[in-house]
Length: 336
Image (tube, rainbow, N blue to C red):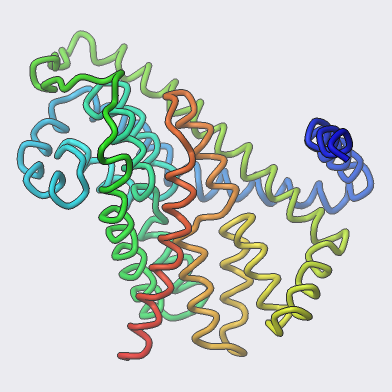
């Protein structure tokens, strides 16, 4: 039995990849359309909205803006979140820009030795959020057809993020980071010269292109994975199992499972249930926006792995944020 278990663990990933390749051939027509839709989504929505932010964050990290911000916000960031004031830029940009800008900023801060590895792990848990444009515009107005629902979801999302940040102030609180020594950012900072700006801008664009192409790859890949799960009937089977064991309706289960895998498609399905389930649809959407989905998780992991930042605090932080966001949404709905 031990031999069988070891063999399964050893070849499980290989088996999944072989099965995925076969599925690409069997469901080629549907997969082609799914990949095409994913590519269009990336080119028309993600690229225009995120690419300028990636360049801006790369350039900002070359200026003294981070230090100036930290000087004013250190008295709030350290007591509330147990991170230096300079890390406020990750919280701000991660909130207004959307996934996965926060991860990119956290990695830049760690790379410049402004924060330690442990502080980066605390930050990564709550600085990657759905952007206001996505929640208000796409989810609230386009999907639900109600800007008030979008505003309610946005407020719950931000409050949940801050609540997670406060919880993670205790992450490895008594553990010393032996690979990090406190340094003053302003003593290491060299102002950008006009003569060097062209080179710095070029490097920032190259790094941003690499990141945005990686995100595009994830979007196309997970669009195809969802297509395979839907066409093969696996989604229906899973939802039926959930219905038989928990009595949760099948359409709710499908929207939730889809959202856990890929955020945008799951939120779209959840919003379509609004006329049938009202507040339940809003609560599911709130959780999915907080969690972000496995697709976003892997996007973040591809960014932070280069800086040796653990993905565990991000995963647990997003689960907490989804839970907190649902709770805040429920309380607001009760008040309203």
